[in-house]
Length: 296
Image 1: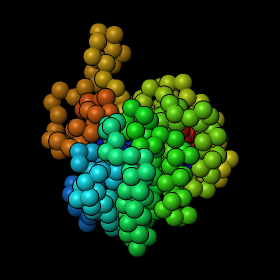
Image 2: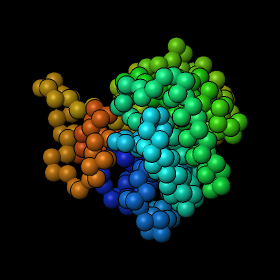
Image 3: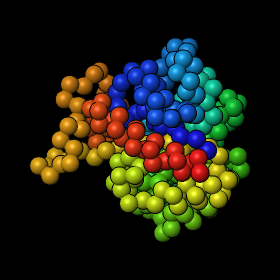
Image 4: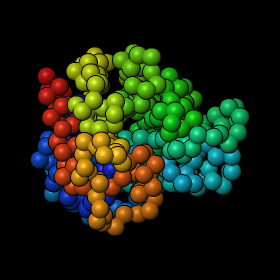
């Protein structure tokens, strides 16, 4: 088991991110699922320079990206997008694609349960076939009910993985587990050997250690099932727009250029562009919370 992080939470040059996470003990990165943002040759060189490996990527399933769409053309374009992320992961020598099937933030279905299940299974099978050719494992991820109606629990993600292939896995996220599962530890045990990736943020979606989740028990349960993948940092700090804010300097007032899709993705998660200091603190706190538990 090792500590990893996403990088979609703040728009900054990849070299800046890699320097930041290296000093706090992160070993890998789960890179933002926007292949057009990354020149593969340059990115591989940066990863090597900073001694950080690519663990994988997460699909940024936003806008028209939706494997559960009624429109066949939209589903086909969504499959092409997922395949492009898989190809990027492969070319960066990564291992995992975390797949969110339905559009994040979409809470109204396009069809009946039976229709949407068939659409998603077929689309995911096509993505899975491409992933197998490229040597990348797919882990489907359930989100909480406020981000997607499609599936929210580990058992549901496993049902999709089972429908695709015995070699398809799941990704779980402590923040979502805390909302949706009767027993988050049993959900981890249920995933067992099919757990390919694990994301971390505290119950308030700040860095691990800034809420009430029991991190020793969570990491202990991962060890119990023999999990040996990444524990991937994915805090999404919600912006407090009131005078009661604990973090008056968290919002970046002079942002660097950021693709509109990435900005919308961040904002749809209830967050905003974060200042470098606040972002750096969140990276540090997660590392200080999780790394000692991994090493025990």
